[in-house]
Each structure stands twice: as structure tokens, then as C-alpha cells.
Length: 455
Image (tube, rainbow, N blue to C red; front, side, top):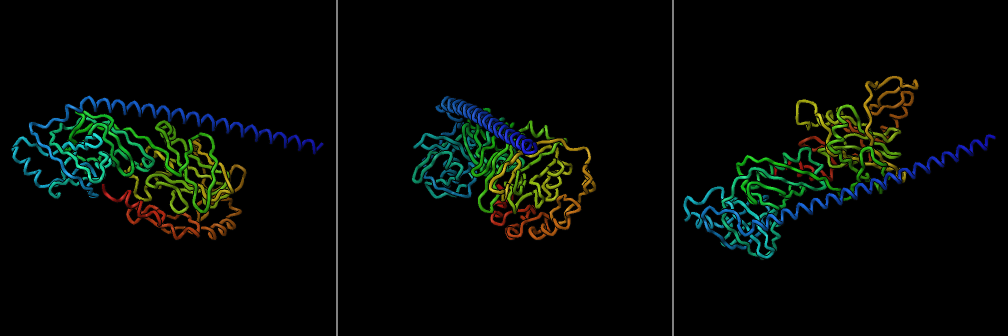
């Protein structure tokens, strides 16, 4: 009788596991179909936008930008110059001397149409200084890529008097877009410091993010110096190489790692999801095994030596995150940017999973925050809990001594950020001397170049 009962229980459990696996498979298939449909829709929209831009450029191409009654053009040999970051060029002194003969007709700041005859591409540029060698023009990488210039080619410059820009629509895309807390501000500063003009259809890069001019007023080419511009910015975060994607409240993701490095994933939160989470819900990142590391801007990944929150040495691979936790962490590194508490979730959450037992399943869920929760004291089942002094995780009070013995043997508590770091990884854990953020020693220079080098 007992054998038959156990057999029935085992059979029922097997059926439940089979149904759960089938359900996950259907969810993953449905998610794949949704992603493919979204990708096709986005591709069609981009193709339609490109057709409109090309049609408009062809329509105004022969007319060209106004020249203010000054007919001036020169054919010059181009040379690369890495110090030029935007659309400014260095011209020879002879160009300035010829322009001075037109008197008051020449308007400042000086702007030119720059034309590559080999591929029939036109852009516009400003001038940094007149110090280039005679017969040559020094061009920065943005214009070199935009014009498709090749070594040894000659380009034509033609004086233009461009109208002030009133509005512009920019489309920013790239895998690193989510690394910026406020890309709009970064973009505005970059344009102000490095650009004199914008042309319809122009593509340039800002910190690894591709930006395209999808619409512009009042003309296909405009001046942006001292202009009051209505900026319409559309952003699209693309998938990064080697970084997986997890959907909030979506299907679980199977994780496999190799070596000591953590498998990298990220959650892109839509405007609707960020609004829904607010202050009333928390983000719960869980895995069936391994150790979880979580981070957000200005970190661009979550690794065992560079993270903001982790599951640590606790028996469960779970990290719960609230808006208050994010605000506290950013204030710890003086990165909140405001005296008041932040009121919205970041757009991207980075997740690292290290040392899973062969493979594990990762999920990200949103749940309501309990009205009150005691950090210490008895739980619902009567067991008392307390906090480990080394990893700051809650553990049963009865097993605290055993937990701390193991925890201090495996982890070193950083005296600066108080994060527990595994002893074998401790030599790689450093802090940025500028913002004090925890970083991987091997990637500290990349962090400083991305966040502490002015454009």
C-alpha cells in the first residue's frame, strides 16, 4: 500500500515537472515570436525613415544651402586629425584671406559644405582654426566616417550661410546606450562643444552610441551655434555582444558559465514597467544556484569584483531591490545628482551569475513590497534571524557562528564600500579615485575614459 502511494506521488511529480517544462517551452516560443515581430516592425520603421530622408535629400540636393551671395569653393587634400571630435575642420590660411575679399557679406561663424565626389556625399562643417598646411584640410573622425573618406582623396569645400536650427529629431541607438543615466544631457553637451552644423541624414557617434539626424528644421542643413533648439530624442537600446537579455516577469533563462567569469545579463525596463514598479514594488532577481551580482548606472556590468548588490554567501541565490535601495547606493557614491530621493527606476539593470552548478535558471520578477518587515527577530515559523557582520545578509540566528566562520574564510569585506569580495578576486577589486565606484582593476581605465573624460 505504501509502495503504491509513493509510486503515485512520484508519477504525479513527474507529470507536474513535464507540464512545467512544456509551459516554459511555450512561453519561450511565444516570447521568441514577439521579439521577432518587434524586430521586423522596427526594421520596417527604420527602412521607411531612411527612404523619407533620402527622398528629401534628393529633393533639395540641387538647390543646396544658401551662400549669402558669396561664391567661394576650394578643392583640398584631406588629412586625418584625431583632436577634431565633431564637425569642425582646420583650413589653410589662404582660405581666410580669400574670404576676407568679400567683406561684410561673409557671416560668422564660418560654415562650409564639404563634398566627397567619389561617393557623392555632402555634409557641412565649421572651422576650428586656419592653421592647416597650404592646399590641405584637417578632418576629424566624425566627418571621415560620415563622408566615407579614403586616404589620398580630395574634397571640395564651399562657403554656406546656414539658418539657425529651430528643431531637430535625433535617433540614438547602440548597446551602450543604457550605460548612461541621462544620455540626453550628454548628447546636448557633446553637440554644444563639438558641432557647428547639422545635416539631414547625418550620422555621428557619442560615447559609442550612434546618433542619426532623422528630421531638422527649418532647412536640410542648419547652424546649431547659439540656437534655441527643440530637441526630439528617440532612443533604442540594442543587444550587446556576450550579454544576454532577461525580460521582467517573463520566462526564465537558462544560464551557463565557463571559468571564473560571471555570465552577463541585463534587464531593459520600459517606461511602463518603470512607472509600475515605482515605490510600491520591488525587483526580485533569483537563480536556482550560483551567486548573483546586480548593478545599474554608472556600472556597465555586474561582476564578482564590481557590483552594487549580491546574494553573497547566503544559501539562496536571490537579490531583492527597491527604489530606496538604488537611491541609497547612488548616495553612497555621491551619484544621485539631487538632494531629494530619486523617483524613477533606471532604464537598465545589469545582472551577473557566477559559479552555477553546471547550469541554472535565472528569472526577474516584480512583487509588492510588504508594509513592514523586521530585519531581525522571529519569522512567521518562529525562527529568529539576524545579520552577518561580514556580508550583511540575514541568516538564522542559530547558525550565525557557523555562517560567519565560512563567510570570513571565503570573503573579504572591502573597507571602503563594505561589499564582500571573494578572496581569490580581492586583488582585482579597486575603487575609482574620482567617483569612488567599485571597479575591476583591469577595466578602471575604460571607466575613467567613459565617465570622467570631458567630450
